[in-house]
Image 1 (tube, rainbow, N blue to C red):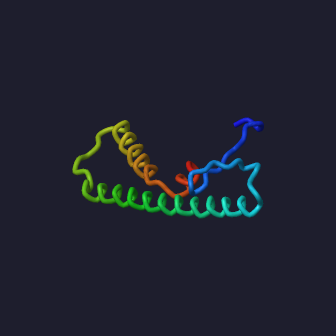
Image 2: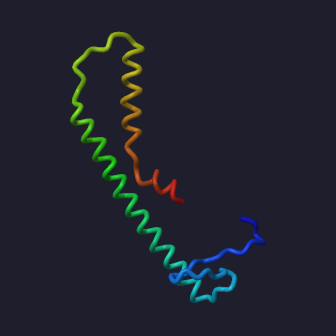
Image 3: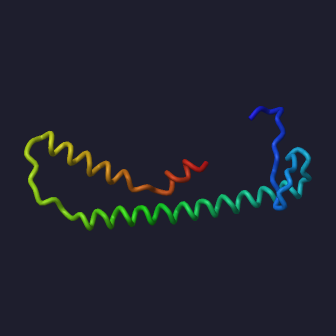
Length: 101
């Protein structure tokens, strides 16, 4: 966005108002709205992350332990890499926040 282009705030009634023309109280209220909205988004993201992690743990538990023996260094290395990959798939909130911000 170029500096010379106007930026608009959409009000509850759908009317667009130039941010440059907003009075101080209106800007304060808009900023409070943004803070509350961000908190709600983070809370919802936390809930999604928790559900995802619970699903991953459930699937791991259902799958159980493998009942076969790996023969050779390459097979063992591949298996170790996959276990590491699965652990990395569990997402933390910082990952989500990084994507949002």
